[in-house]
Length: 169
Picture (tube, rainbow, N blue to C red):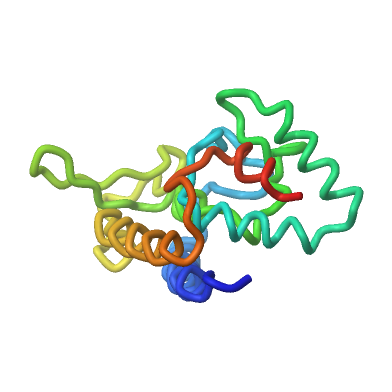
């Protein structure tokens, strides 16, 4: 889809960064297919919603109908893309889902901290800086890409996953 080039380039960089961390710590990362405790019904940027809708178009009619049905009956907490413990549009998952569970540097009230899934990195005395994702920097890039997307395709800045999927007809 037009307008998604910048987003796809960012996602490629994020996936490379995440893959390096996973490759460096294979025994210390518990995140696997079926591990869905963190899969929440979130709001996503418009550009991410467009990428999700684009991915939905590549699915068979039956798969697309299943996904639309889950979105139509979405619960406020559980992600509507979650089915039998798996993400139905995993390749198009939003940035937050791509980085979730990995070490993220957060800043709150001027203080920086590192957060990650408590199931990951058990027994490690510390995590090297090369494995930490600067969430502020990532969000700045994503916000800029979303703003560029909205210039070309005006609409709401953020949507829930269910709203994004409802627009995919």
